[in-house]
Amino acid sequence: MGRIKNRIRRLRFDHNEMTQEELANKAGCTRQTIIALEQNKYVPSIELAFRVARAFGVPLEEVFQDEDSHGG
Amino acid sequence: MAPLQKRALYSFIIGLVLTIAFTAVLIAQGNITAFERDPNLRLIMYAVLVGVPLVYLILVNLTLRKPTQIDERDRLIMERSSRAQWLAVIFTLVAWTIALNEIYRDQGQVPIVFLQLIFMSTLIISTLAQSLGIFVSYWEMNRNG
Figure 1 (cartoon, rainbow over the protein chains, first blue to last red):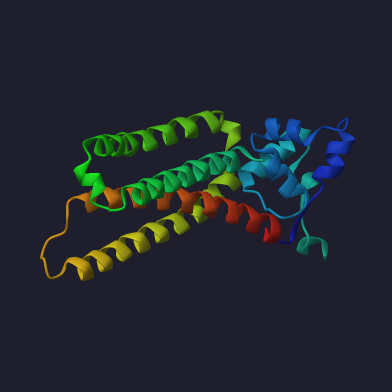
Figure 2: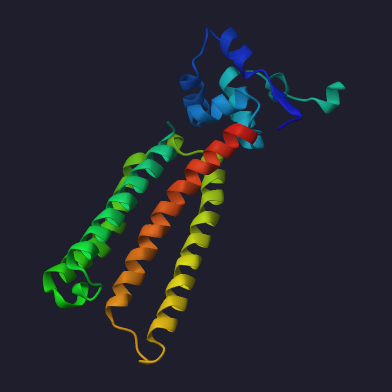
């Protein structure tokens, strides 16, 4: 899995150490999906990606980055 | 454990219990036609045929009640597992068709008891295959993404 990386773990830490369960509830998915996202083992749909970004109150590109567009 | 995994585990246990119960009855009666001869056994069989899908529906509702209990990743896993389920059901039916065809070819007719046995075995195989498919899909997704 690949080119889409994310900063979910970092953002959770920055948001008062939000738990995976809390984020899952806010984003409307299961905790297992949050775990898979953090481990970069699952690339979410655009809809879930937006919901995760909304849960942190930040724009989408602050959570998810395309490695190719950053020369990675 | 994700809610979908829990559901798969319950289904797997139901499937195993049914398989064991079914095998035990066959061994105890010594003959497949016992299902036909014994009216009590036939009633139990009908109860199981109706009861298992009902229990399954109730379990699905209990374990996957809230919208957040199943998400897009789970749906992807279910799609993968339904392929395994479909294949298992087809192969079960193929096995029954070939076996019954070869065994009863000369008689030109198949005992009616096999109607129940085919349905029962297909139900069990379908339940077990779906559960195993879910377990394997989770394992694959956690491993490869």
